Length: 374
Image (cartoon, rainbow, N blue to C red; front, side, top):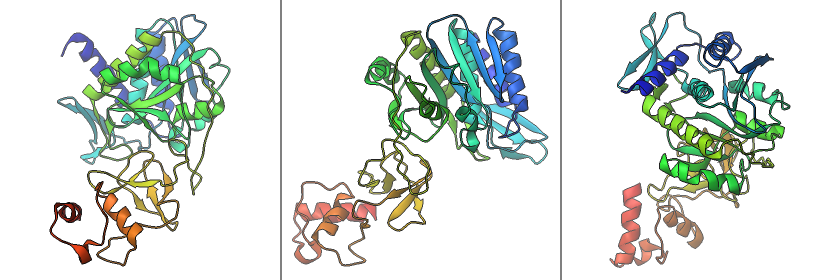
């Protein structure tokens, strides 16, 4: 590992080693402010209502990076971060059990600190209590954001998602065009996502393009949470390239929030789909129209599923009819057609094959797909 990567890895481990939990964020707040005073001495640092605002350089418009200072994890007396071939994880030395390393959102903090050291003109904000409902960002000093040109956050699991909507679009076509080749170079694809600080800032009326993205943590909100350094570093490289390419330009955008949820939670895209539970073309499994989650759960509402990623109840369809297995119940032509289509079968005559099976390739395709996916 070269010197630059080694320095980045060590700083990430240092950041992950600071324990923080919602409402118990004083150590992380102190860590960030002390780091900035030592490593970014010419920056202006303001701490207000447990939110941290850092401004470096003079500009009419600043790129801005935000992160949140809390995690969902408990504070442990004997907590230590370990590395194994680039995989970062944590253990409670007293119990000998793995505990969550807090990549959500310590990785985002690390990226913000790296950006503060890399660029001469930049702003970074660190919000408290995001995990309790974006409390810090909902109380953000929006005057401080009046000269921000665009705002990025690294607060999503995985290594390839670039969130373009949170209950509504987050950025303009001009912004999309500017970042498109950068996303492609780093293997990222646009998708919708759940609420986080940039979504709250958009709701607050920040008036510029914002986005969230995957940053290399996995199994968030669990004791099995880990961070893959290579994936986190890829995200940092992409953020650096975006800021280098876009510079200190202002990308204005007016956010129009669209909410659609039985429980009042927010979830991605625009809330206008008539059928929110769709079927994966390859597996035939139910999945969420908005985020693609295939781990849907039972809902307390009739004809709905609960999506854990969107944290919302989503409708089975405009007519509130579940697609049933034709081997278990009587179905009309249209029910049967929907069932077959759920397995990705296209351009065939959806007749009742139990009555008219004739060993044709057409009928075999239906039977084979059905048996393969049972």
